[in-house]
Image 1 (tube, rainbow, N blue to C red):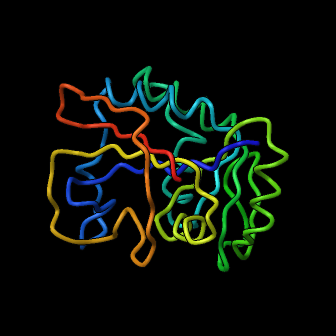
Image 2: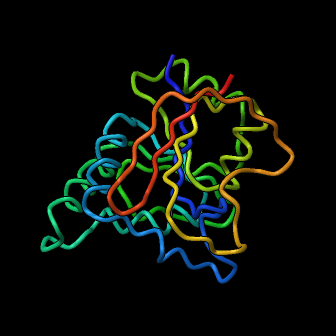
Length: 183
């Protein structure tokens, strides 16, 4: 069975964006970006909330003169299927993408059972549904050396998770990668 993996780039105090909705502090350097590319290469399907999808769709048409590490990520992103959970989005702006109106835990469970590659869930609000349904198998956090003091939390309130540390890595930029299995 495939795993459902939640990956988030966060501030040290656990936010994916600050109180103004900015996440400019989270842009990875080349070393971190290459590492993320390798992680994401194993994802066959992304489950996104609308807002994250609208941010990520940039990779569908990333400029040809982008740095090599970014072009590599664009290829990884375009090769995966994408499911966008939205009640308002009318059409998608990327290939291999479909819209679902609601998060259906049983449907996601069936996707995990049928998939040949892991699934990634992105967007804190959408991931919260997966956490609450007990569907998330791994949590991958890239902690940035910044404290933003508030904003959108990376992990949901009201959910207890017992985790097992599987991997860690430090980068010269001060970013720390932590990979946990849920128990």
